[in-house]
Length: 278
Image (tube, rainbow, N blue to C red; front, top):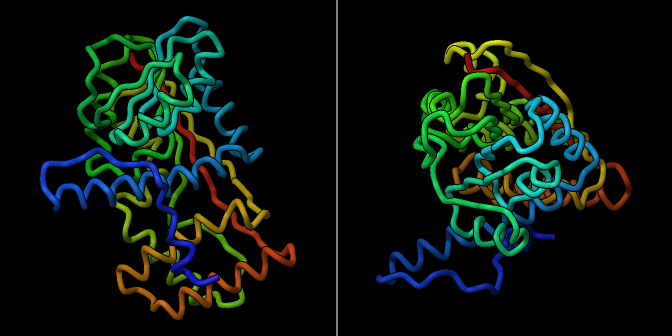
């Protein structure tokens, strides 16, 4: 299929009405991007490797039942619900109101609030746990976000960061050069594409103790699970001018054929880091 077909992910759900045509257009584009991201997340979150990663992040929190946990960048709220099911008082925070609307629809018993990781709308020393999964690569100032995490954590509170390094994606392909151009081009469109490899030092520099770091790899062999990820990479690199439409379409066509013949493979190393607030 043509890349243009992959890009067509807009939902028929209405977006909030804005006061000007330009603002309405910007809101529509933001809503479309959020819904496209939801498609990717929904497919990725049910992978066995993704489930295991979330479970590991909960283990690294090392918190008893009833502890208050803030899940930053909660998206549609799956982790918040899973933490609630473990007996914790979990609250989700996200910058996207579209994401939060979906989270509230899916998990009505959970609490969700809009806000930024770099300016948390949370009181000082008010939570026992802080979790951020695939968030810090999108931040302008990850150091500020960690400082905010430390501010809201009680003494002895735990922080867990999860994310993949956008420079380490591995994809089996007939054209290694084009694949590298697209993956590198996608990484260049991300504010902090390599922040995950720096999680450990980020926590140490902020004064956290008992800091640990791990790396696990998500391997995707079902093309239905990986093609939306690849489509977003191709779209981003076409938009930035790193590759042409023809190159991106040929690349997507090859990966589609690989999927049809059970020859698809995408691997994403994921970094986890955890620490304790003194």
